[in-house]
Length: 306
Image (tube, rainbow, N blue to C red; front, side):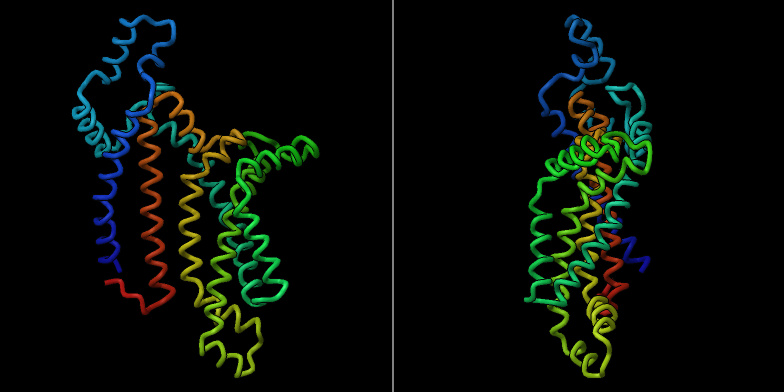
């Protein structure tokens, strides 16, 4: 197992280098001059050139790229052009909120999605199945930004139950979590339902029923356990989405997470922050894929790790 994990980790290094290289050159295609933004609109061209030299933006791109790689190896993500603070400090102040939001959202959406999927798969072709899948399709189809504004209008403006911005209390996580989790629960429900339907056709399920086992035991102990591989896959991918793709929801609710930090950094042409955030998002996807592969082996011993 350790040999497999080590080999997989080493295999991700070329991918990470490719991501770092692509992001470094791609962000420099964003229109706008960071030196002008830092200097201010009233600054003269001479002042802008001084700022450009100070930021190292006057150097050839190849030199900037090498310096960036050296900094990454040393654990230095650079200094934010917007706040003049280390990028690691900026990320450390936001990543906790994003992780909390991701775990809360993934927890309830997984439970709801699995229950709905099993319920629909168990009653395939009946009204329960049609109802469950109708709800799932609706959840996937609703745009997250529209759902977010709708929740704000109802629970914040009309009822005044929940706050609309910030992350000062547990109530601040409810609306963003629902906005992100509805689509995730719907996707998990559809994958679970399809997997359950296929599993219920297997011989061992018919054998379990022939032995007189209760239907709940057949469903949850036999069918669901052997359907977990597909469920684990979609849950892992959705967790990656929550960490890196919650930009819209965080922007709607002015939630102080990595998503809003990325938007702010792009608006300010903050190269060091943009590069570091995208690198983190890419790294977490690679880590999640590794964890999912290991869970495959734990759930199904027939899957070879070699």
